[in-house]
Image (tube, rainbow, N blue to C red; front, side, top):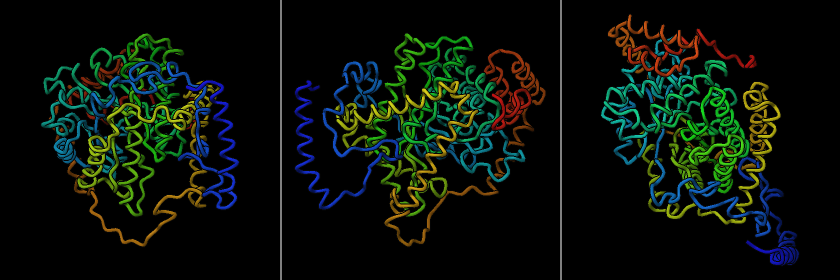
Length: 560
């Protein structure tokens, strides 16, 4: 970089510039704000950055080349020049038939991977006709009750030709079993199945709340998935350790990074405690981050995440396989930053958030529809969101060189700052006994809530401008074409479920559920039993109810 004499000269020149140029201008005109910070107030932004701010960086140790440790500049040696990120638009609503139609539409429009959204009853392990499901069937995603539904969703979609991400957590084992069963019915070799299940229950306890079972049995199910998939579906990512929802709940970039990697550490430790070798399952771990507003902070976060995970897996867990140390991640643009006011502005927000994700080297990307602050996105808004990615890929030049912001005095300094703050938070987590303990103590939740509260005060006081919300407002009469899920759609779904139950062999389904119950009482891997049960058309709710009865349901504040 620069030797000490050069740095001293730069420092002297900066002082002279400040005295001769900056101070007179500030005395006369002032600056827009007394203090500038990154998007979530996590880092103070200096007026200027110089070589002095990156003087401690060792290129080989801290940055390296793409595809080489510590992977700061990316996990692949050719970046997007070899292959673009997967354009994986999140979709799923109402009935399996509706979702199948939307999936075909997205594939026809050039989407390169599928991302499946589930309704709240499915996320909570309830069938569509359960009392708890009333009024929610198909509202936030597709309602999946049985193998019949999963086969309908993927009708005409060969599972050996697509990669599918499923945003499902507490019942992730059941939805994965259904996906494997569909692949088996299609004659697809399990080794060819590609995709991801979110399967990240720890962030449910701290940020999102769609949990079912207590942490200990939940971790058992997760490690069973790790073990099963490492042998049966080696191309399938067994978990997407999610900072997305942590950030949506109000966290800063550094908090998102620290708590996400902290959850990752907890999963690795649980798997090792269950008898797995780190190199047996770590290559199938993946991550899921938020694409927020501040381009530079987000790029710094993604770069720091790769470097931190490499060092954590290398130093804490002594992994040998380089793939174990490579952090691969999906990004979704920030839903919490979408506004109901002047919704056309959301197209611009999403484009900048997507740019940050691409400059940061994401492996796959979902761009939100402009209308998602109001309802499920229409086909038109979904198409615009997908076109945003395609324009970014083919017209912007952002995909033509790897890690293009590397070497920026600001970005490199900010990468170090975000990393340092994240490590300080991780140290606090370790002192509290790890993420499970920190969550149980409500410490993680308080950190996120305090940040969210401070941010809201900033917005209300106009210390933070949200265009169209607290500044640059207009009177508008919003008339929009929005997707709606009706009571008739819900009734239609319940009738489909009743038909599945009436046509199946009840004795076989009951026998498979009883075998699953016995396995849950022991220490066998649960996945083969879940697959057997869903192939006998046992429903998602029936499988989850076996686990509810054997494992119990989590109550916040209860003992881990």
